[in-house]
Length: 294
Image (cartoon, rainbow, N blue to C red; front, side, top):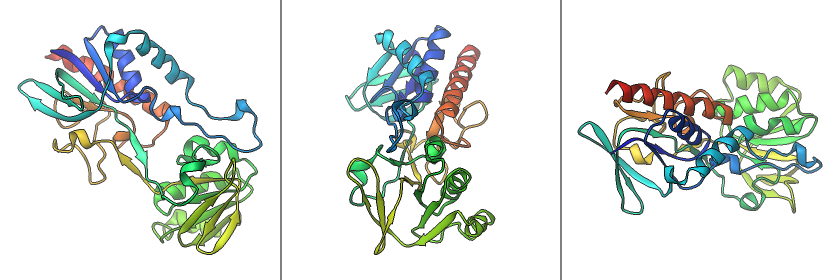
């Protein structure tokens, strides 16, 4: 019986594992990879290497700590988690059943894709799914952004504050009639296109996009049409909201004692590496206090 199992090796999971080790917990990290979304960066044409976002140095330090202690990590996929008497049973794709008194789910979220021509080839080459992470690379440039939900509108406003012009593509009306949407419509730096993005063009970097039948030259593209939380392993436990995000309190506790969650898989305020790091630390400390009380 383990003290703690951490599911997911992104920023939140790696941080939680490092904190658990520091607390001398008998912990195990189960993950498909180490680093999560920090393994994916964004390159923009015309910028030097030091201006390319390649991941978090903080996460790398936690990653090295976990890599050093090989006995605390296992490369595998968790399929489902089942509450049992006083603990949790964690089942993996390799047909293992592991038991722990507490579990932290830090499985992150993946961005929804448009699945249009050019998208797969240009990911990271001027194409990003996170304006909050990469907007600063487009100072005095002309990026495009696809999306009409509130997340997309906030991203468009952030870009409008720094970019020369923002090409905002609305596949549907979404939240464009909200107060924020009306501010964007009134902003002279924001050009709005209504319709579907049909293709992304470019050889080494994003150079243009096709909206309906119009080709628009751009310096980069953000796709902000939503996230898919990696919460399938707890889907039957009644701890998620209507969007599939795991609902946690300010201690990263779910509604089930001993079950914690951290990072992008939760209903946390914003998805960003540094936020996930902090949430991972909170979840580990919360789990530690929970274990002490048992």
